[in-house]
Structures are given as structure tokens and as C-alpha cells.
Image (tube, rainbow, N blue to C red; front, side, top):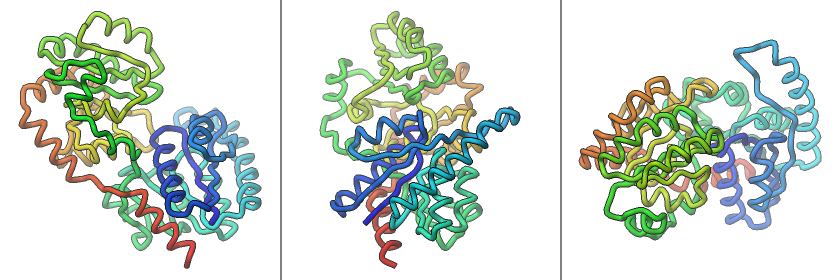
Length: 362
């Protein structure tokens, strides 16, 4: 069995791709798996570190606001299509899987041209342009949200949920033990703020504005700042004994286990993790993503009371009020936890592998 997996760019695409690959390897240890990513993006490091081979394409995304910048993008797309054609021809996969991200389009397009079966794994509640273009010729589209029949052929949609990292569910520490492990007081509430590997400026600014309120409430904060502005926000955090700020959090399983409340962007992968773990969350969707998909993701939860949502433009002014309300109301947090847990779809990676094998054996 030979499987080609394409996509990446962010952890939200890479982690599901690796989860699928790991599930394939558990089921079919002799399967040959090759990844295709975008040169210079994080998958070119993360995938080899996980034990898989990867090829890189010189592909880049379109600038929808400054169209004159896209001449170079079109040239890179042409080169990427040529390289993707060579990869598909030489690797000769039994199936090609697209998880989203820049590299996904050229690879699945060339696979479809050669008659290779394709499977799309769409993480978001509002799909991007590439997946909508590829869907009519895809053999299956695995989704995490209902209602996507308006974008994809209904007879090929499979509701699987998004694969999440297994280690997040395998943490055996109690919340109190997890807090001690991280250096926090186990008897006080802990807020976890995550803004992604690069960081989210507005989320960080909103957290900084909320620090006096968090201290006043006797709560604690684990603050993942991301790379951008990390030095500044770490300096801000030093003024508060109840706050620990780091660029990255290496043990997210322990951090999630310890958290009583999460503040986060609304990426599909993060939302799936929060659903599996049942964590009450305040979502601040990024406005700087294709198709405004983070807002759609957040609304899918907030509309049924499974999360609180604050728009990016309102975050600095409103976050402290939302935090205060939830810290004062354990019942509201329990309700959020129950509702977000009810949306969880487990064993998504195994369901996707079932479909992969089914397609190959047809």
C-alpha cells in the first residue's frame, strides 16, 4: 500500500496529517507513506521529526488584497504543478490524501489527472477554495462539521471529525497534579491562553489587558505567547506572580489537563482538541484567514452554547469581562464543558483509515 499525503503550513493541517499517517502505520505497518509539503513551511521540519519522508513544493498562497503580487505566485504554482506531477508519477500511490494547505492543491490535482483515487480531509466548517475545486473529482471528503452539502457532493461526504494527537487523551494526571507539574497552585483556577506557534497579537494584547483582573480574582495564567512579540509579553508577565509566559508549550497534554478555562484562536484542530477534552473556552477567531473560516468555526460552537466567542476587534475591550463572568460562575463553565464535549467525534483517524482502505480495495 502506497499513500501520498499532501498539505500543511500550520499545525492545524500538520497534526491531522500525522495522525492519519500514524493510524495507517498502526493498521498496515508495511505501508509506504510519502508527504508533500510547501518549501519553507513548518511541515518540512515536523514531518521528518515524526519519522516520515517529505518532498517540498515551491508553492505559495494567493494575496487576495494585493493582486499585483500574484505574478510570482502563479509562477510558483506552475513549477509546483510540474513537480507534483513528477512525484505522483514516480511514487505511483494507491491513494492521495489532501489535508489542506498550499501543497494540497497541486498534488491532488495531478493525482486526479492520473486517475489516482483522492480523499480530502476538510477540518473547517467553511471550506477553502482549493477543496471546493477538488471535491467534484474526489472519492471521499471527510469532514468535521455537518451542513457541508452546500459545498461538496453529498454522496461523498463522511462525518468523521478531525484527528487529534493521541497524547492529549492519554494524560493520566489529575488537574491538581497537572497544575503542580507546571508550577502552579493546585487550589486556584488556571487559565490557559494559546495563540498558535507564531502567536496572535490581538489575543496577547487582550490577555495583557486582562492581567489585573486575573490577579484580582486570585486566578493563575499559563500564557503561550507564540514567537511574535514574545519578549515584550514575557516582560509584561513578570509583574505578576500568578502568570507564567512562554513562547511555546511543549507538554500541551499537561497544560490542557491543568486548565480550568482556555482562551484561544478558533482553528479547527484546536477546537477538535477542546471538544475531545471538554474544556470551556473563549474563542477569538482570527480575521486573517482564508474564507474567514475561524469565525465560522467559532460560530458553530457559540451558536449552541458550546463556547464563548469574542470578535478580534472587540477582544482587548471585552476579554476581561468574559473571564470574570466565567471565573465567578463554575456552573457556566460546567455547562460549556458539557456542551463542547457533546460535539466531540472520537477515533476520527481510524474512521479515515477505514475509508482509505475501502477506496483502495474497490
